[in-house]
Length: 110
Image 1 (tube, rainbow, N blue to C red):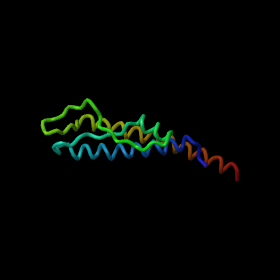
Image 2 (cartoon, rainbow, N blue to C red):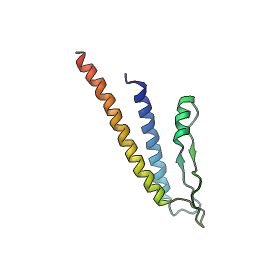
Image 3 (cartoon, helix red, strand yellow):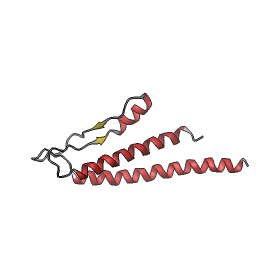
């Protein structure tokens, strides 16, 4: 019943949830020797949704590797948590607006 934009918003929110789990895992492993930071490539994920390609978790490049092989940067992870929360709230508000429009159309049709 909702338009394709709502489907995209739902998919976007699913990606944000997956990213939140990865960032939480990165933070939990901040002091784990050899642990490598993982993230989601949003551009790839959106293209894979269109083309039906399976999802891909990536190791971001350019991160400083500590002597124990761990490359988790707490500042980066905290920034990603904040960005993720802002994006999720925006997507939630957009989806809420879509639902309100459908609800309004249904109520006007009664």
